[in-house]
Length: 326
Length: 181
Image 1 (cartoon, rainbow over the protein chains, first blue to last red):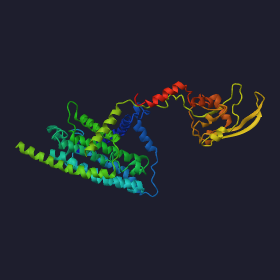
Image 2: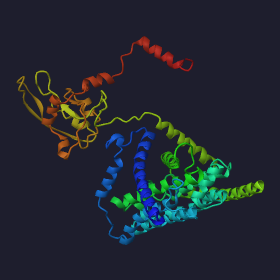
Image 3: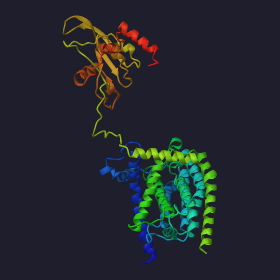
Image 4: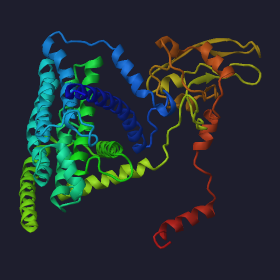
């Protein structure tokens, strides 16, 4: 089979699956958060409210896509699809099994980080094009936050890259299958890097507790203020997609990807991704929003210096391992 | 940095503990919570056993109403039951748009004529619907379940308990030695 055809089929399957999982993850989140707050969540459509995502999607499709009179029309229309495209683009290099990867790039981690930092651009576009003070403030906050958290994110992702000696996610997972998961071994830097990767990627995806770009109590809905119908739906879809792909990347970088006994690799990868995803939901519904200055303080005072230290420690570890092997 | 971690774990623990608990939701349209015994919503004007209108149009309720939603027009006419001449309410309106349901009108009524009803308030499409006239207030007497409370029962309930002298002495002692006990 030609590699192009293979890549096309894989990406179609992966995109379909990602969108489906994202839609039902919203159902799961609503159920889960409901139980956290002693409620029951959606119950009306289908058994246990399982058809809720379908109904939500239909509702959003029915709604008119309003463009404000003073908005920059082209950019305003462009922003929501761009966010989804960038979020989906990240999924191309994520290995869901030893063979199930749309494009096995040599520089997979770099590609993910690059696309991840690009996601601030459509958010900023949306904020700017809305021509609304709340959207603009939200967009500015998103950019400030995205740029700051790019650094700890890259530093945390650098630890597995140094330990495995490769930037390809497939190589990183293969290394972990031979030498043990990075979150457990080597003790220290791997686990701490995971602890840094998670909040940094949450901040990238503008998720609670780092959702100051859309802070409802301050900015109405931030960049999504002026969006209606499917535009709004796409912006939210992109946020959830980003979170889902971040948990997939985290499970590949730190939890050994498709490594696991008995079941086929794909099952393990999906299970790890979904557990991480549920963990992110738990964080989302447990914590309150950080203040803007606290957010920057955590990034520049703790995450960046300690992240640099972690990179150093893991480099020393690799050198020591080499020396002892000789 | 450390407090952030500790607090994060604590909040995660609290929400996770809640996940394992039973939800407290009552699935409203399918099941309805039993209404409390003292639930009060709308109003009704009453007749006595012989079918005589109790309201004498004294306007005590109109005067005490804090939000001034009651208007009473009084007239003198012969009773259709006893044939005696006395005052009646010619028109009685209670505007529920602004009513605060304080029940003061019930408490001041000298003839126990006005009471509250136990049915839930129906949502209305027009403000006019929420404005109760005399006809609808007398309709409510026939159609709606009434609360037990009328003026004389409320006064009875709120009166200070009749104390016996010996008992009062006991209470005074208790107050003085309250700390020791």
